[in-house]
Image (cartoon, rainbow, N blue to C red; front, side, top):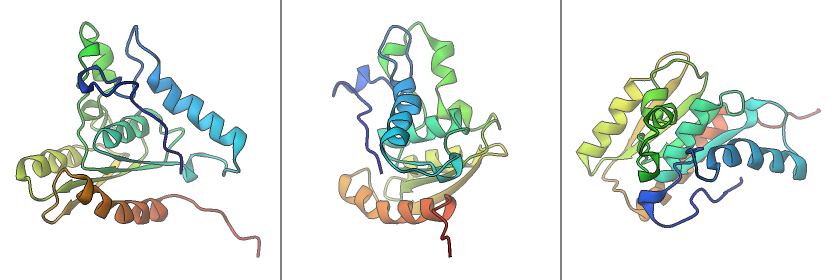
Length: 182
């Protein structure tokens, strides 16, 4: 499990949205190319996308959805814990076409990514849960999205922590692991 930095600042309005926003550091390239290349060069990994997945919480869920939908050649699955799906950085101003191309809200319905996604939401906030459920329902084949609602869950670290075991179990079931020689 690799946990790279995805934001260079704590200013959410100036987040890089895990993307290559014109005129900004190329965070999308770093996350989708440089980090996996570093991991493959320095650790034993399995070949092919079938053993590569993503897991993110809140902003990390946005990033995981975006990267999986943009790069199905690299990733087979992603677990999204209580995320959102529209890029919201103020740095996109004047770059609306690029913003749409980096939006999981747009990408999920295009049917271009053969990936499996688990989208979760806390059930305490019906509005947020409905947003995630509606996003999951818009997936166009071959993309598949399973929805899970954590009863009583809120957008809080304590509730995110409760979802991590389920997300890891789901990833284990949806990714290829090492094979025994015996």
